[in-house]
Amino acid sequence: MSVRFIIGQAGTGKTKHCFDAIVRAALDAPLGPPIYWLLPKQATFTAERMLTCDSDLKAFSRARVVSFQQLGQEILSECGGIAIPEVTAIGRQMVLGRLLRKHRDDLKFFRSAAHQTGLAAELDSTFAEFERSGKSVSDL
Image (cartoon, rainbow, N blue to C red; front, side, top):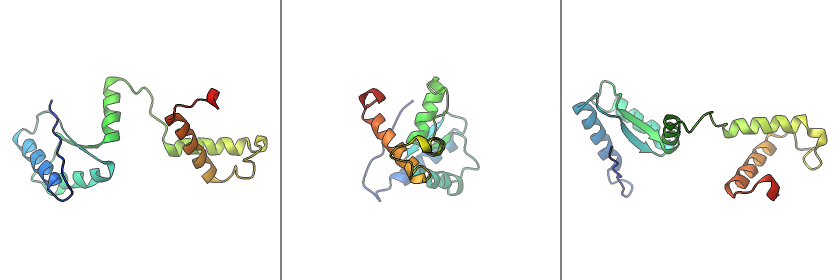
């Protein structure tokens, strides 16, 4: 398996070059090994739409348009590194909100704000910052 990086300034034809190469490879060998087109998350929909609507491909099974996060999750799932799905930021905020409301009367500083959704989001952000900086409960 080989990796090719296509780099350059905006508007120099990187996307067109990748699109043409993927379509050509898919037409030449429709049942060949997978082709991964790695893009930032915000560009994946546009690339998938290009492959679907703007190419001569009737269908495509070789070409995979993935974001960096999707590729990481796929690698971990294939290598057995992901046993359970990760809780999303929204999920963490829902749990934090539930805990804040449940223990509202036990809180000293956040009692009046425990019902506000922004507090759960702010706490989630703070906990994430602690985790990124390597801080644990014992450090606090």
